[in-house]
Length: 269
Image 1 (cartoon, rainbow, N blue to C red):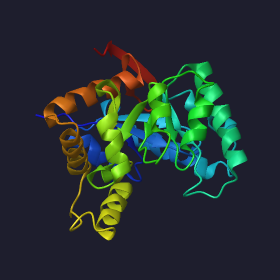
Image 2 (spheres, rainbow, N blue to C red; image 1 turned 90 degrees about the vertical axis):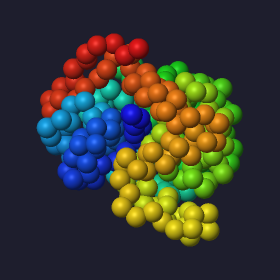
Image 3 (spheres, rainbow, N blue to C red; image 1 turned 30 degrees about the horizontal axis):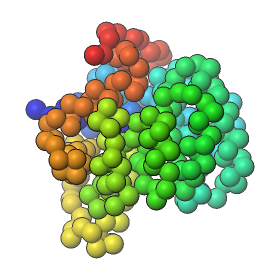
Image 4 (cartoon, helix red, strand yellow; image 1 turned 135 degrees about the vertical axis):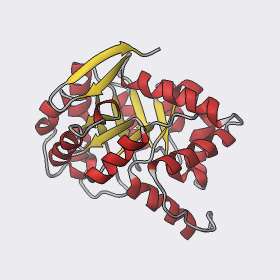
């Protein structure tokens, strides 16, 4: 049996949270604003959530003109992972200077509290690679799809999570092919992102039809299967590597979520 993991997801409601809990898919659930973190804390109190929903938070670049990074610091102290944070010049019109300042403050804080970071790099791949080189840490580049900059992150020994458009996007396929086995992860980014990826693939003529009734399980399996094919390996073997990478990125300990605190249990091999 293949054990799937989701390295990055925005969970919008209790139904989506329960779906992951029921399916038993360990998920790094990310909050990009204080309000999103409040919702994530509610989901963390659902029965069975403690081993499935692993929280991450940080001020998302899209909202860096609405909140100050310092407003997230007390929340960032509660979670095992910081992010997603970064810069975006494609889907966001927040001035880049403001985004950069928010990113650097959070990178500094993450270094101080010694927690790994998830990066959002859309359109700013080269610049963010330059910035993080000054903040030594463990980094996960979420859904990298840039035309340039991949080599910069490889040199920095970053982790990468492969998004659902690996089925058709050459840039994402390149990442899937080139990642070291001990640095590759897979993600959905949330089911809204999965729907976008399949719809976009159909619109651009890469996919004949959009798959119906997608779930986190079916989406992650398609991403895993496609990635394994690109790497000329079996899905089962890749799933084992991805599972190990998932927990290694979070920490050397299995971190589980409780409604009011984090408890560390046995070491992960």
